[in-house]
Figure 1 (cartoon, rainbow, N blue to C red):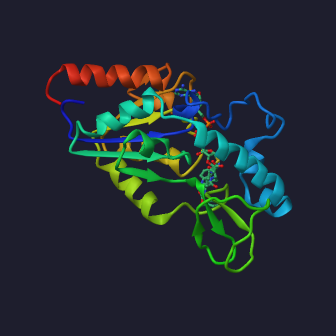
Figure 2 (spheres, rainbow, N blue to C red):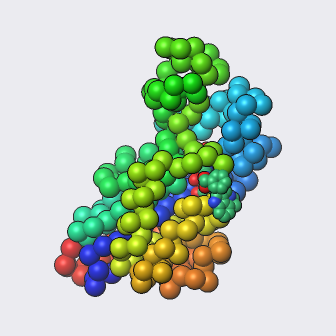
Length: 236
Ligand code: BJW
């Protein structure tokens, strides 16, 4: 890490697990545990039952609003100051990286705290209203401003994410199962461009064997330790 000035980090829901926000493929212990998130985060589920999907999102919003950034978010925010180029690419929709102080954040899958009009695309902030909520201007259904399976990711952040991945010296994949594309292609992009690949995840993933370093530990343990050691080297 001392030999590079450019670092890119891809995060997934595992980074927010210790802030009390459930991961996607982890089961979980809540009133929603009998629903599979993979079946609710789809345009088909929303067309079929917008009320059910909204209730799930309102529950998740309440968790996000009550959550605090954990030591992994804070360590990444501090790390940003150590490098002249530092790009934090996140699949998370909870905004915890920004709340921890990270500035150069690319949100690939949107933000759960915003709503979007299904007719006109207008973005609005959440407010108390009926479920499912409707657009104040045109009366069409609102939806969460997130990216569901089968939908395109926002073009600008995706382009910037591929650029950062192909031009970094070290690429971190943290707290993601590395199953969902196109985010899962970013570590390969980095590796193909010569970057060192580091994975931080307590579980093995399809990326583990491709990584140069694999820390089979929680992000909230590894990242603060890494920051501590970088800081102790004195150059930062
Ligand atoms: C810890 C931890 C701790 C726990 N510390 N770690 C190419 C090939 C194959 C398929 C496709 C492809 N291109 C497109 C597709 C289809 C699809 C896809 O990838 N499917 C795969 C499942 C096969 N992709 C899409 O549809 C994307 N759109 C697209 O590509 O458009 C073009 C296109 C359209 C149609 C056809 C073809 C192309 C859109 C993907 C949108 C994903 N949306 C969601 C929901 C967002 C909104 C919301 O939050 O509700 O994004 S789904 C869900 O998965 C969410 C997450 O961001 C994403 C990734 O999940 P993540 O973060 O990795 O969570 P988990 O739970 O899977 O893993 C958590 C990990 O943390 C685990 O490994 C734990 O071990 C670990 N962990 N505690 C560190 N303390």
